[in-house]
Length: 440
Image (cartoon, rainbow, N blue to C red; front, side):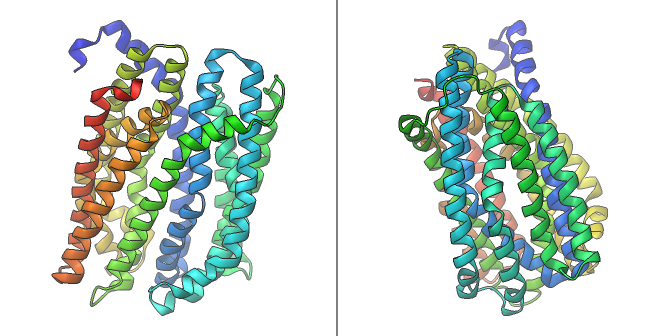
């Protein structure tokens, strides 16, 4: 593949991708540290709180899918306008994106505060977890408006070559979140509720910082454009649907594991810890996913489709190499890391088993995710939706249900169903990317 690329072009692609990817990697690292602290603090409070947090965070991710979708659309639109040098259209697009995001965040905040507790009561999760889940999700929901603006502001900043500004914001958010997390939980009467309140508080601060930076480089006419919003929504809605299907898949896995005949609470806690450890692997994968979206969008804005295609491949290869190195580190240190996150021996042992199995598919996950970022930057989000949805709902969930509920196998078979779906997803995304139809 690389033999057909000129060395000079490869160096240019690597430099351009790395310019966006390394700050994004650090941003993802900050988010990882926040999540890792959440799991650590929850585990120190108790296994029930750790298991409840794992379930609630899946619901929280569902609540922010609209923010992520609007941001995907905004990145695709804004990154092209930024390289086209049309200041008025760029300013109008940024303003329109922020207004739409704020409105969506306010609505989602209301829905989450009012209806999320009812959803938790109705779901078939262990009864002993519900008293912890309800206050957590209510507090998380109260901060959704700020989380929406923080996510969208970060997307706009990286689209306009202000990625280091976004990096500074997320460093501040990380510091505040971790500090408040420990303070609220261990030094105030809030207890476990402080985990959610720390997230809401830090998102508020981060969103205000981003808004100040974004406003400073909006030098054109600030006019709300319904046409721009339609374009953003047209690109973003498949990613919203994708993230809903992804989070529903995660919740389905939690519910399937809840059908295990024994140790289900410990295994749910182990999955929560394992996913947080595994998220370290996602750092370069999704950093390069977002970098690929910006780079491909910029190159298409410059009317260089062939360079956009090749740059996407080079970016994916770099990301896979970094992920492979991290896989080796996690495998070697899995037992120590798991023991740090949970003092329960069974939870720690199950976390290690999860990691040993999950690490097999991580390079394939990275390959598909980064190429999917390039497709998103080109606005071809519908085909990303189709291929990822197939891998989850035709492969992962049916296999996990078959293994656990019908055949009565253990939790390890759920982990293998997740691996198989990653293999399928990487293959489907690469096949579509290689056809180049998305360039048109």
